[in-house]
Image (cartoon, rainbow, N blue to C red; front, side, top):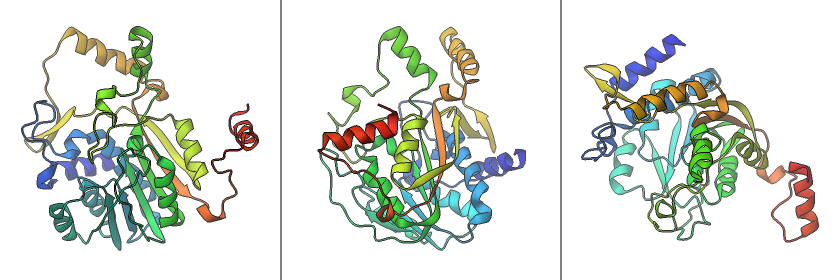
Length: 311
């Protein structure tokens, strides 16, 4: 494990970001002028770790990256696999500059809607991808109104036994629970932060998930969880300084110290942590699955409820 951490640290220290990755002139000091692997240092280490877990089973893989912007996974994939047979970036509003730059890494782009039930959905282009080895869905599923549509398309694009890696927020994390108890506030985003008020191509969070909910969605779309882990993402807490990974210095207050100590205590319970990562495997083609589809029949709906949640 320590060797893997050192490999990852060296990668982040020497990482050359795409120009659009740097958060320049960001009013938040912890984000300003930092690239994506500094901001998401822990989250991408977990992805790095999971990729190494399956590396021996994937030689020269065919990769799909859904919600691909800003493209940093292209370079992380090169670091892990050294080469890939094909790499497809799928996303919305992948502009000409992005498409041209990633082409240098032998990456092709599909600019398409992946969430047709969004209130201002854009044009949907068919992926027409088959027999791919691995798909990334990183911090994307929580933005979707209809994750089933996206997961079904991923299923059709992967070979049987192909892998899907998901990272997303954990709705059962302790600070969400504490906020509900103390302040009566929901873990859902404030309406002003939601698609109720913003229709742009960067979609706000729609819904955050528990492991149980993700397990159901994945089973329903032909996947089986192989590995799942809760972790504290420690967003923006690290930076590269003097060729070393260091903790980002912030001004301390009694409140900050209290929160840090409390977080260490509650994180002993895995499902109280704020993020999660899943490695799933495709075990069945969507077209071959015998599943109950959405229905207007109350009888069918009650049968689905009974079979799934017991009542």
